[in-house]
Image: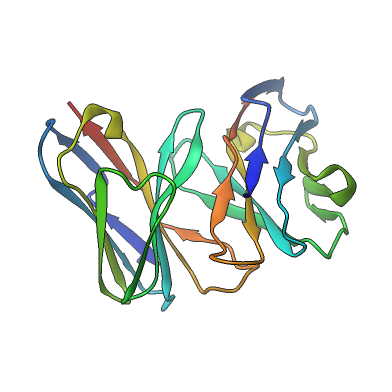
Length: 115
Length: 113
């Protein structure tokens, strides 16, 4: 069975601080896919990034970076120099490579950036 | 226009009523999904459909039913609404590729009183 754990329920930081959102996953599939989504206060779900299990390269996109480590089954998300607009709920999700390929979500982390 | 459209955006209903949430998409995707979001629980899969003739239960299908009227339309029904079905409901689509993200509608906020 697939499982995603986001142990941090809520995080609150002051603007310009760096913040890391943790994501730990469980799967028996050798091929799988990991995703991050952002849900701003307006409620929509915005896709941020995907990562294939066979590609352990870290990725940086502006102030956002993602650290994928198969050895620890983690796919952590770091925001550098946080801004108030980064305030949102962030979800990590996993899709296995076999079977129905359903997307399984973590519980979400509510990030609040205070001015 | 949004690629994935959900109607209504908000709905308040009474216990015992039957209601339908609708979803339509213009992305041409075969796969469609219904999720519900509850605080602290993330998004949980209710039903999913890989084509018009293929409907599958998700992890929390009890109390719900779905209909795939066409490739572009996938509706979710609550046969007899109860208060613990109060939640934010999302429809999503996918092209079926393993590394493809889900594309979500804007959600329907349902309150059952």
